[in-house]
Every structure is written in C-alpha cells, then in structure tokens.
Length: 77
Image (cartoon, rainbow, N blue to C red; front, side):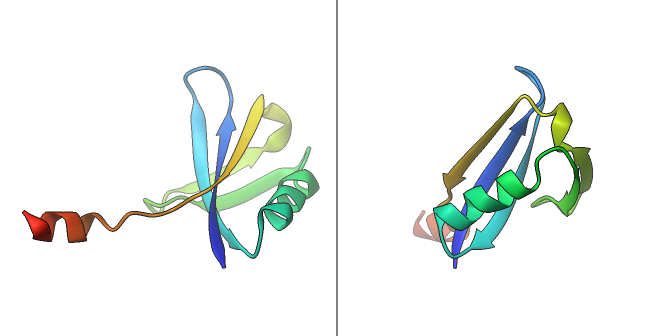
C-alpha cells in the first residue's frame, strides 16, 4: 500500500489534509472523483474528526506521500 495526501482547499488560507492508503495513484484519483458533491468524513493525523461537503471545496490536490520518521533524525544528534 502507498500513502497519499489529499488536500482540500476552501480558499487561499483554509484547507484540510487527509491521508489515505491505497494501491496506486489511479485508485486514489477514482476515490476523489467518486466523492464529488457529497459529504465525506475522516479523522486527520491529529485524530480530529472532519466532515465536509466536497461541493464547497475549490481545489483538491493529490500527491503521493513519503513519511519521514522524525524520531530517527533526533537519535543521530
């Protein structure tokens, strides 16, 4: 499984990020397209619950995400 970051932009200053785990970029794109004009809900990385209607989103950005283990960086110091 790969991890993908989806960012929903409402305007230039307001956005919500969501992380998903799917097999490919194509599957992630299909998920985003299937959620158009409906309510979706999810918890973010801080375990905050979000519920939004995708009709209110101006831009959706999708990218593969490569998580960096920050604890390993601290150990090297």
